[in-house]
Length: 235
Ligand code: GLP
Image (cartoon, rainbow, N blue to C red; front, side, top):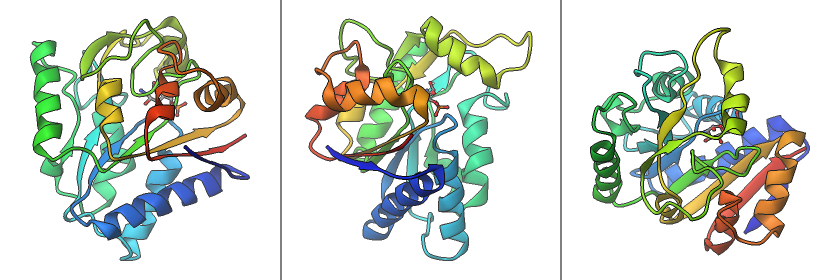
């Protein structure tokens, strides 16, 4: 695990975007695993700038997102589908049919999870997976538990995650309680991983991830077993 502490959020965003840009330049047909949440927003802004400057080309890139709220349609402003279009896809030259998320509206969730795993396999796997981290150590929506979920699955969100994510929803708006998420196994099969974290409320999770025992109680700690992980963080 390479761990890089940077001075502020702007450097975190710039450095992370540089690593992703390097991946796209090395392999213009890269499959990128992407994440939502507030942390990657700066990275996406930097990638948009690099694309506009003509330094990176998304024409051959395919993306697969980590997760989606179950029960939210893609048009809902809090859906991850909507987030990705707003924050990245509609600003760069990526083809809409090369951007993938689990469908939050699938009536048969199990079937949707199988479809998503097969899609990733068919794409040849993920070259670089970008990850944020929840303050309880969750990645994607793999919440603390008894084991590491191997595959994309439907999951219940913990109280802590519901609390953290409720800030994005309006007063009286119901926060979804379930999500479809890549599994820890899906994430671990990515050829490289870039984990980013910003701010004091991620300190506990980050410390456990880097220095703690590998345990499904802190899902991100499993990354200690991955051969190519970069962590970039700021206080
Ligand atoms: C959600 C997402 C995660 C993300 C986490 C932290 O739970 N499913 O992928 O890492 O939020 O988000 P933030 O970066 O806003 O703290």
